[in-house]
Image 1 (cartoon, rainbow, N blue to C red):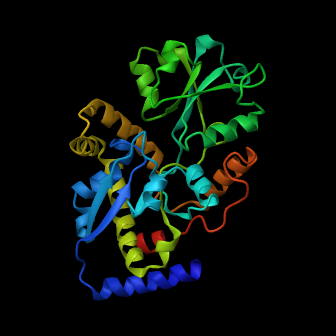
Image 2 (image 1 turned 135 degrees about the vertical axis):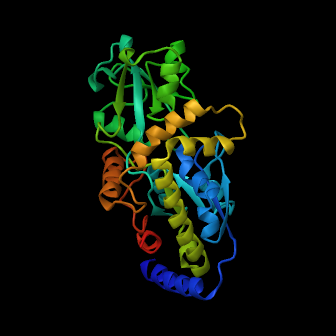
Image 3 (image 1 turned 90 degrees about the vertical axis):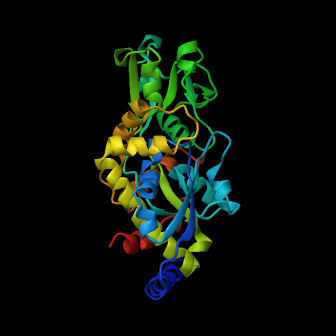
Length: 328
């Protein structure tokens, strides 16, 4: 793949040098609904960064019934936002996703537990009921539980897994002792729901040493041999990272831009600005290029948890070729 991609990049550079940049269509499929988690892309579009790069970008929100990898596989998007465990799992199963950029440096994944359930450390998780997101989001959790030596089929020596909807209701209605949360979203739903920080204990995946990469940008490997696609992709990555760094430095404005693009009518400036502030902590330290050490840690974490996610270290699952060209 590397030789083919180098040739495609060379051809793409020639293409860019000889053809006036028209507004080339490019579509990104988000992992979830419109919110500040994806502010960089909305900012890049609103501030004209994509237009300046000669791109007409369509941003497709995700949702509970949308599987981004399948949208890409079906030709409904050129690039998608996905967590690396799900992307690597898809690759092993036959959908050749390749990470071409990594705007998020850190993981925002946490397990948030009620202290009154008797939990003060991971040693207390046995026998408890834990809310877990599925649809690909369960992979880091399963790896973590296997590393802790806890089964996920119940019993005193394991945990009972509750398939959690994309809300935090189970921690309030007695269904679960802990729920899955993100630092920038569901944790604050718990707080806003009436539980104080003192009544909670959180286990950040980063602190537990099982953090895996989130919100990377992935394309279909076959497209990387197409010079025209590589040209559009390179311009998209450059403009997107411009959007992300602008969002980091202009939290309130970025939140307003996200609100302007929200069709649900349920988002508020308070929620989105708070979320953007937390997101900025996760994107800080990344210029868009994947850190190989973070990739290796993600793969090691997944493999240490058995074969629940991947059975062997992937090959060809990421490339620096696009960011090398986009960020120079």
